[in-house]
Length: 474
Image 1 (cartoon, helix red, strand yellow):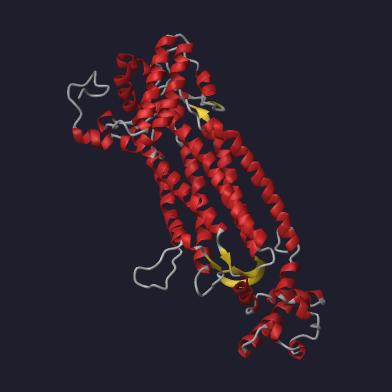
Image 2 (cartoon, helix red, strand yellow):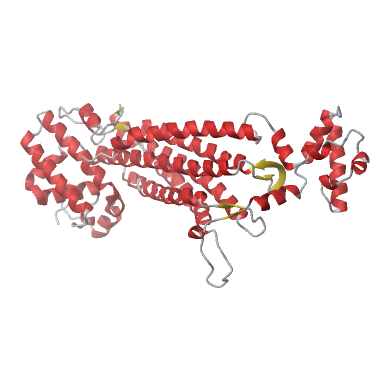
């Protein structure tokens, strides 16, 4: 086969070099975006008089046929053609002949690949925001259903203070809301049009970059041709943002794994999201959250890999940058798969309210409230802290809990304690007493519901406003 771009060469490319440097095995995912971008480019060339309108019509018709054949699997993509760009052009040549050679007028593969990646990534971001919103909605539904469900809150994985299950779920709703906002903010940097930057210094042809940007519904143009083809910070930003999404999913996964254990017995995941053991018939394994937790490492790795690839590259394009796609594709697919499972898994999760309440009733997580109670009786906090520590030690030695003590026993430690202590130390009172903005008291959690619902509505509106723009049909 004739060497690609081989006019100044006297030898064919070594086959091992072809195989090693080819990217078609993974950048085939960009086929649709490459063809959509090519159609917009050809349309612009005709508008600027660089191609005739007849030539443009023939090329666009040919590209539509190539698109259909790739989509239906009717053609084989060839590693000998290096990448998706050249594969598309070679397939176009089979459809329309030598005229296909005019497709590449006024552009380089350098600005072409940057365009394809931005078209791909902006669609991924919009879809991922929608998936995150669906997860938020599932968490919010569980929170509303369990507004009165109380469980221990933990620090250092030690029972600390009672909270409502609704309050706990809402913590993740707001974590994922920040993830949504980071992805939304990144969209404006992704949605800048690089085509027209050429290899690095633009083109001598009188092209109209803005026409292509408008056709493809970009917000603006990459303003410097060197920057347009040589940086992938928009990919790094995506990988960083998705690393945080993965981190939040992993933390929630860890709690689901713990809570579904016999030791906790706080929740039960639906059978549809669990597997059995090949040896132990009694087992019900929470494989989905475990695997989501495990896959966080590969998402982090893709971020570090991309940062490392770019850290020493001079301007402009270098072959190293071929490594910018596999990690991006892998992260997108990994997160899309995890999010697709997480929302229905949370929706169908059974909450064991009785086990949660038993746990919070049989611990010392109301000890802080005993200290606060004493402060309310004019006992200095440091003194109150010491008194409560002694009370807790007494209970540990006796094998009981604070509410099991008689008033006489309380008086051994402080005469300030009165009969109303028994109401003050119930789990319900402990939660209700934390009536501060952001706290677990019922009315405060309901405020969080309202805030979250407003954010979710805004996010869905954002998704709906962009879906048609990013899912271009050419």
